[in-house]
Length: 124
Length: 262
Image (cartoon, rainbow over all chains, first blue to last red; front, side, top):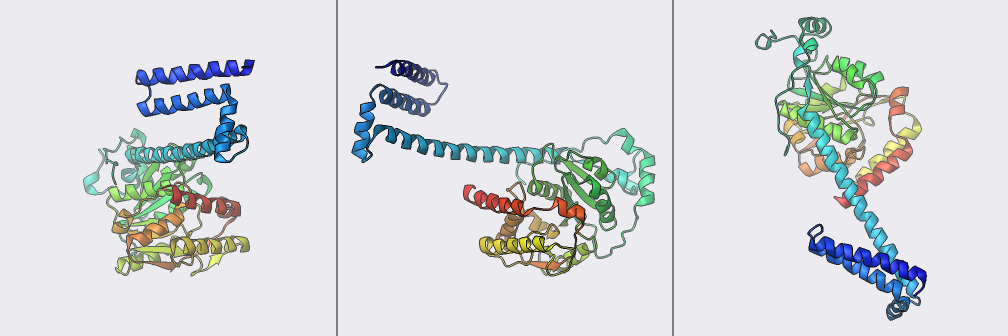
């Protein structure tokens, strides 16, 4: 292993440990923890043994392992962008509902002051 | 209206409760309304965003036809709120800018809370004529339909630039394709609703795409609607506040995306 591999594997191992700890202590749900652990495990293996990605890629009909990693990264990023965008929209929607609720709650009525005062509504 | 609970009105500031201010307005405002065609249960909803130069005159005119003018200040950064305070019956303020669709919905909800029998929506930039309100209301009052939509192409438009006209025609075509509704003018801010029609309106698209969304809901409500010719006054001010062609394309995209995502 070259220097980059040693450093990268060390970082990824740390992240893997973190996701397991997070799962164990209940910071993340079981499913989230397992998903992240799986991602870090795959990343670590791909860094330590690049020839394995080539093996998988060729099984899928892609020539180089690096291409497989690139395609996967692009797909994950696009899905991620879309999910973030959808969440932003939902957030914006909630913000609007909150704003509208506040506006109605705090509505200032000038009805009494701007109108000719009807007998029952006299202000003393 | 799920989630919106009517609460006690906040105390008015002492100054505005003072007798003097009542007398001051008595001099300006007519005690009897000159328009017999506009009944007392009519609420006029005016969404406003940075309309300080125009809104005063608009509200002053509106007060001659309705006792219930609801202004929704959509987070304006100019003196729209202060100007509106002198003329509006009810003032609502969005603490942050949420777009015209949201402002309209706030105004409609509030008018319904206040017991509105009919609701008219009216733009704050002075492009509509107060005289057209009675014409919009008459088919609803006679029970002919529940919703009326103002159309500038059935009526006459004063000083409409050719490019704006083409753009609006495209907007109509868009509405026809997407909503399957045949209208002559899909993007007119002057509309009237009966109470039961207003109760079925629930705008979810914040920004300007609500115009197309509103047509959707009008159609889905199953309530009868019709277009009524109205006149639009195109002034340099209202044109500047209107949509650019690029803005219109953005609105169309926003609407389509909203349909996919929701």
